[in-house]
Length: 166
Image (cartoon, rainbow, N blue to C red; front, top):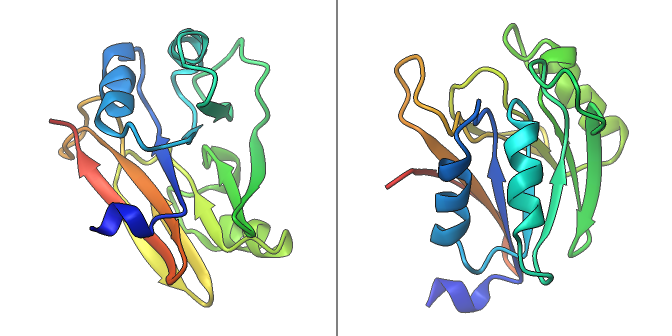
């Protein structure tokens, strides 16, 4: 019954590092997601996946530190259901050390949600009016299971979720 209350589901993934099939699997597992945000480090396979998407699905990509020949921006923002989302790979904001710089960048743009990757470590948090999520890596790495995130914009608010790949 929760699906009916969702105004918009956003699929978020990062750090695929060559694993195109994991991207495709995440998309298949979330058929209701109208918007897909890719947070970098796998821009080549992201472009291949984007080319195969049905027209009703929209995919936005930012460049990661391993996306050397990528023309995607280092960070971007999108407004969905009156909710501004700031998304980045995170390396330029030093997210491996702390989230302060990235959070300030999001807040300076009046974003309600900050999405980032880079660390390969899943994180969901809420701090001082800002929702934060790192969906973790789509590739297997460093002790965390491969997975992705969803952002549900609902009449009751914002819900962040991390899902391990099946």
